Image: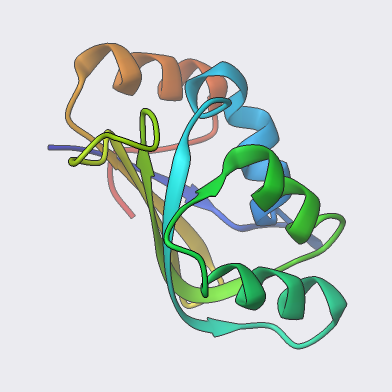
Length: 125
């Protein structure tokens, strides 16, 4: 399994879920997601993100719209599937204590695309 770590904070700017998914672009554009959220920051975007957890899977566009502009996942896991019928995720995104994003994938092509999309990422925290 390949891991990529991205700091969620750059100076005083938080890289939120909407910005992260937008940055990933085509890598996750068509994904459907299962959300397992332990803690979300309070506020309108947080409430919208939490409301999505009631659904079995959510599409990337819906996640971006719910999280925009500043939805913050403090702790949680998002499992991305290639489509609504897939049984194994191809990408897993974890929010780690609101300070890091931990992205995991098995496919070497997805891993390389992630490294290109997130040049400031590292292979270790």
